[in-house]
Amino acid sequence: MLNKLILIVGLLLCSCGIATQATSIASFEHKQFYELSVSEHFITLDSSGAGHFASATIDAELQPRLAAAFASGCAPSYPLIGRDHAQWIRSLDIIAGSGSDLYLLTAKALAPYPIRLSLIKRNAQNEYLIAKINSAVFNSATHFARVIEEVAVQDGDVFIVRHEGARQAFEDVITVTLK
Image 1 (cartoon, rainbow, N blue to C red):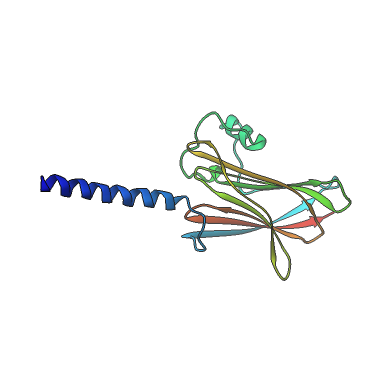
Image 2: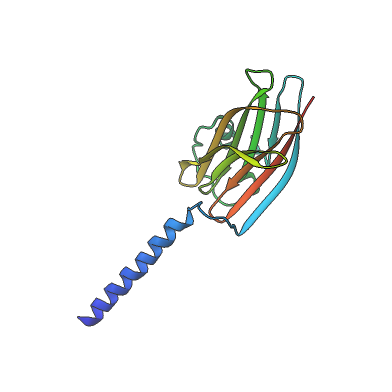
């Protein structure tokens, strides 16, 4: 009887540890990542006031449903598996907005794990958070996040698209040039 009791208590303690660990895996409330990748990019807005940046592309011939899902923000019909670079994507689209210096910024991210997407504007003194959102679950292995904001943009403005996971983060620092 005592052996069974010890076995049951041991199993309960192990399962409590596993449950506690599982909830901390998807936690974004930390300051340090195992890996932080920062890349710098430049966007020149064309005469219509539009520009685009993407950290990677999805081959529409090989993965047409995933490419369409990322473009539209609708769930793909099959799971995203693994850590292939084409499955970790961040993008920023800029189009002319309603005012003379207002532009519509659309930041998107795709990942096989839960993420938090932030759009930040940086100037010489500070960084200003424009928007932050946690990813939506398209299916068990596909997570997508999108923020759309109308923002004043001037020549030389710097925007950061930050994509945070539980163990790693990516920052794309994007400098905008107006034509």
